[in-house]
Length: 160
Image (spheres, rainbow, N blue to C red):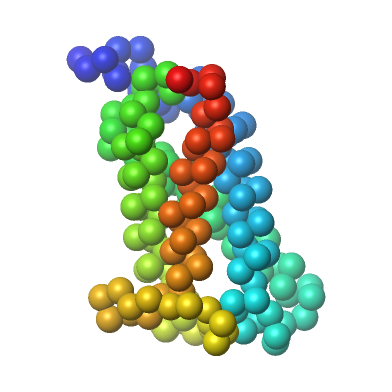
C-alpha cells in the first residue's frame, strides 16, 4: 500500500472533504463569479440581453464552473491516488485539474457555440484554433488561472 493510501483515500478522509467543500469550492465560486462578470462583454449577450438574463447567465455559468472545477479536482485526486490533503501531490493535482477543465471547456465551447448555437462570441473575444475549432481565449485562460489559484489560496499554510 502506497503512503498516499496509508491513512485513507481522499473521498474517505473528512479533512479532504472539508477542504473541498469549505475551502476550494467557495473560493472557486468567488473567483469564477468575478471572471464571468469580467468576461461578459466578450459575448454578444452583453449587448443583446436584458439585465435579468445577464444576471441569470452569470449565475448559471458560475455554478457550472464550480461543478466542473470540483469534478475536475475529484478526478485529479482519483488519478493521483490522493489521501489526506497533507500528503497530496499539489502540483500534479493542480495540473490534472487544469487539463481536465480545459478539455471540458473546449468541448463545451464547441457544443454551445457551434452545435447548439447557445451563445456567440462578440467581436472583442480573442479566439484560438484548436483542432479546427475556434474557441474563445477568455474561457481557456479562466481554466489556466482559476483552479490553481483556488487550490493555492485554499491550501494556504495549513497543508504544507
